[in-house]
Image (cartoon, rainbow, N blue to C red; front, side, top):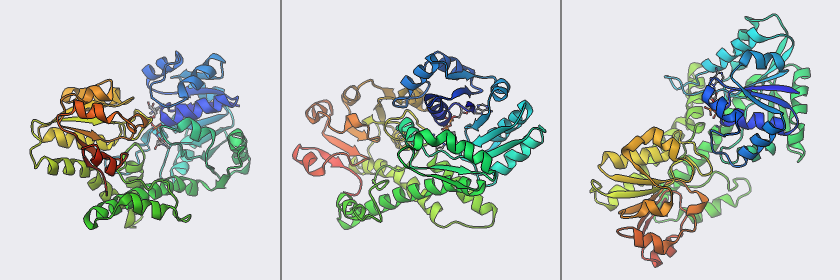
Amino acid sequence: MNICVIGTGYVGLVAGTCFAESGNDVTCVDINEEKIRRLSSGEIPIYEPGLEELVRRNLEEGRLRFDTNLEKAVKESFLIFIAVGTPADKDNSADVKSVLEVASEIGKAMNGYKIVILKSTVPVGTAEKVREVISNATNHKYDVISNPEFLKEGAAVEDFMRPDRVIIGGNEEKATKIIEELYSPFLRTGKPIIIMDNRSAELTKYAANAMLATRISFINELANLCEQVGADIGSVRAGLSSDSRIGTQFLFPGAGYGGSCFPKDLQALIQTAAERGIELKILPAVEEVNRQQKMKLAEKINRHFQGGIAGKVFAVWGLSFKPRTDDMREAPSIVIINELLDKGARVKAHDPEAIEEAKKIFGDKIEYYKTPYDALAGADALVLITEWAEFRRPNFERIRELLKKPVIFDGRNIYDPKRMKEMGYEYYSIGR
Ligand SMILES: NC(=O)c1ccc[n+]([C@@H]2O[C@H](COP(=O)([O-])OP(=O)(O)OC[C@H]3O[C@@H](n4cnc5c(N)ncnc54)[C@H](O)[C@@H]3O)[C@@H](O)[C@H]2O)c1
């Protein structure tokens, strides 16, 4: 099938590439000319494991193209995916301006029946708005399908190729059947395609993110309680998550959630309810717990140094909002580093992939190092914020030699407190 994907970010690029990989002819469109130029030469503007190889192969084999010309791509395509960003607006609702602009351009470019598929995360009712905008611009027939995306950055290709489920929202059986067929190569493991109406599909995406964020804030709140009552969150977590009704996923205490989705999607859902006069009770609490959680590590650092952080040097390991991505959006590291800088500290940072993104945020306010050990030299403590795999079994002897004193603040509980004590470290983690 001829497909165009409009918006070539984390979601659009992965979706477009994976559709090409399953044999479709795909054009990825973006307004960012530099991005399209780089992608056309096989250069990937983001870090996502496995993606570069797939992009290159599909480019070489002629199934994948990159273009800034939306009109041409729409005219040549039967399926048109909208995957542009939907950032938080001033009132915290989702800003669907780009989605509606793109819908209008699609309408103007229509030259026959097409299916427009909303992949961006959009508030309930957006598919209807998209239908209206397109119908204002064309007399051609079309259908609008809601197909929210559930991939995780850091495992996006794997998630897209082997999704837990695919949600298809629409009111025309013929169109939903075509999208079902498109996804069938990715669902050979027997995972379901769930068909529903547009509004339910739109809400399902927000519900999933809200549930996951709730689990994170829940375990973080329990971790803080553990510290006060002398319990160990590691043990509590093990006991709790072995209950098959509860499960292990998204119950890891840490420095708070970040990223381009949870914070903005929770706010957007709260706003969706508020617009209808409904005050959600749980989600504002989830957000507040998370806001406070991002401060916990900085508070521990402050207590350890008895308020005397000015002039101290901190090695920071991990800047991206989670491992295996270069995405810095809403990363806990931003809050923690800013807190240290505000108090007059010096920060020497290392991240395996996010340094270029971090430079856009911190500029020359912090120092950047290629290896984790380079960042440690002469630091008063190590602050671990993102649990990249390479930080899990470091050379503790070397760390001790490089630090002024053996002090580690671990925002992800990746080391064993008992072992750290045996090795002579002053070790702080979350809820233990
Ligand atoms: N990132 C994730 O993990 C993830 C997961 C699931 C869903 N989503 C949702 O998917 C959507 C896209 O997210 P993302 O992280 O890929 O965003 P992104 O910011 O990485 O990419 C969006 C892209 O859209 C382009 N764009 C904006 N306006 C455009 C226009 N008018 N025409 C063409 N291109 C345009 C931008 O230049 C950018 O390249 C959002 O709604 C997001 O909530 C994201």
